[in-house]
Each structure stands twice: as C-alpha cells, then as structure tokens.
Length: 71
Image (cartoon, rainbow, N blue to C red):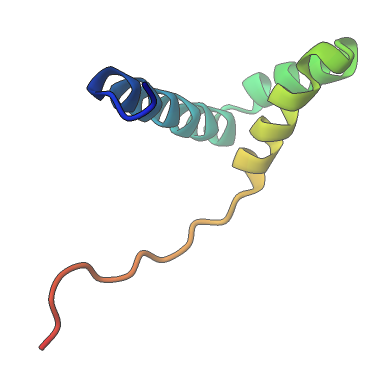
C-alpha cells in the first residue's frame, strides 16, 4: 500500500537522498563534472534520472511560509 508506514518511510528517505545529492553536487565541482560526463556517455536509459538531477541542481530555494495558527 502506498499509505503504509513503510511506504511513507521509503518516500521520506528518497527525498532525503535527493536533497543530499543536490547539496553534494552544489558544493563539489569534480562530482558535478563526473555527473555531466556520465550524462553525455549514457543514452536514454538514464535520461529520466539525469533530468531529475538537473532540476534539483537548478531548483531555487523558495522561502517557507510560517506554520501555525494566526489570530
């Protein structure tokens, strides 16, 4: 089930992994170059993965709104 506790935990871990990957690529130029080289080397089989990684690298940090009750 997609709403099971295990599925939720797996989704959270996936999000954390992509967030960490984005941080690593943003701070490590050689790693970024290697990913770009891999992108050029491999064809359609990894196209989706590389597109997601590009979006993560270029995603802007949006300011988070305040949470909670406002009187």
